Image (cartoon, protein in one colour):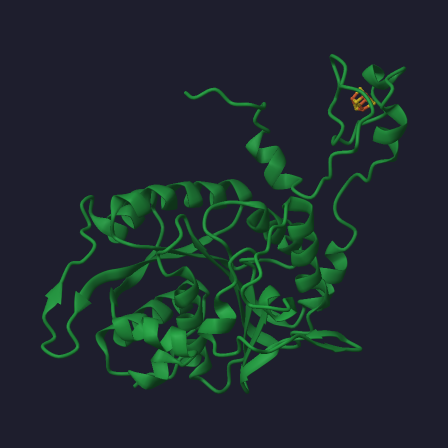
Length: 342
Ligand code: SF4
């Protein structure tokens, strides 16, 4: 194994306490230190006489005090769903927007998308609200409403320019995600889709920790058929299991290409190891379906339009309906109540 520059933290400890900020120590930790971020910091036998004792003893401990406020704010949200991918470029954000538009075809549903991909927010562009800015009311931040029943919140709305780079480290990302969860006035929602960055990073740990009390229904994983993408999905599934997040299922995106003119199907990304379906079986998680590549999905996302409304009879749209039906099953809902059948 390659040498590491620092001792890795215990995975379970990071997952259960991701929000602890390490106190600013004035001297190195002595031998037998219980850990400056632990409950015993500043209080243990080894702390007696340690130059850091005052700093460690006064550092905040225990769960984040804002978690009850987040739970109260999201009390009107029936289902909270994370959308995850192990690797970038597999169409995770476009899948989030497609799922949201498909849920929104039922006027009885109200849907929110929280764009938690802080360093690469793409949901506003895909939803056609890129030039919007944030609205603040006495009750908090108001989502930008794309449709009467579909609202979006993204850091993009807070930036002066869409080309500004966002170079934020862990604590600031945690703070922003907390603001999103605590201060956005979502009201009553049937579904809140949380679009996260690829991989397993600060954003995932923060969302998981802050929503633990208000309950996440689970995660939808997005992959492409190649093994290089599936490899990272295995890690993502492992993360969910360690973090106690239910895996609602796996969607294989860009699964073949159906020519819109002649309907001939060809495989652009070869599933050399069996693709998403085989992985779902291997990892014992539900397979939600395979959505073929369709260049019109990319165009719809670029123009901020609903592919679901524009091409309802396309093979990709039909495949998406299957995904939504299976997802409804996993949520314990009747598919007919989620999306009207044809
Ligand atoms: S005060 Fe205790 S917890 Fe803090 S550095 Fe010293 S030994 Fe470690």
